[in-house]
Length: 424
Image (cartoon, rainbow, N blue to C red; front, top):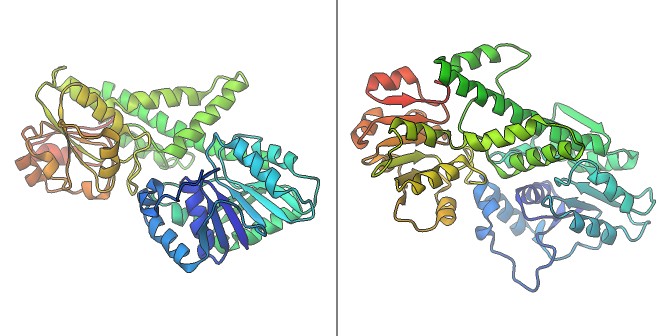
């Protein structure tokens, strides 16, 4: 098939690269108007760099000739894939108008953008009444850090379509990727949009609830890890998204959560999500507050180490990451900060710029030199089983504040560390 993908964020690049790899001829149009500017080099595009394997896959598909970067759609493209930002609804509407002027020409509009509930129906209304043209909704179900696999081998698929021919066309389009899916659901576009929001909202509420329980556990001296295991053993609850921590981040997750909360507000309905979003921002500062309390509100002259800056493991993205608030709070107290992250150091350096109080360390143990505390912010796999003797040797004060509960509390205390986790 000949496909045009619109957008410049993670969703659009993953779709373009994976669709090209499966044999389609794909054109990706990144911007609404280039204004004569040359295309940004692939190696400078942050979403390609941040996502494991995506830059390499994109380069491969461009070299193969199946993926090109263009400024306008191929005239005979039959599929137009909208993976735009939430504020680009007007661009989407113009694309639909432009590409469906001839009602005799077959056109399938795939909306994979976060425009809100009912957006695909609005796009459908822009189409001329034709049996050869339709707009469908395909929820973005990829997760940063595993985006290529999530797109290419999904466990489930939701398709928002209500015309027989567009359902058949969509199934054919997704056939290279749907073989691994255990569950394929077809529903009305509006219901599919609502389902995507509802899933994201439920996950956010689960995270917010376990964090609230952990904060209470701290106050009444019980171990949240024991509580979490007991809760997770109940088959009605399970273990997914039930790990307490120092707040969630990410661009897509927070954006969908915020937009869904706004939908409740528009309907004058109170929403749990509004509270979850507010409390999550407070939770991001939890490690700083624990450190502040430990040193009795005096951090002057202290050196603090951070392990982890990305918002989650396996990605270099720092979008809405808890580390940003923590670092800003530490710098505001004139604390010297030493930071390590396996992938996100360049992004963090671009975010904070040159600052004599902030040192970017290429080695996790280098970040511990003369440190008065270690804050675990991101649960990268390499942090789980470190050399405890070397850590004790490097640190001036063996204090660990574990924002992801990756360490065994008793083990660390037996080694001579002062340890505090989330709800532990």
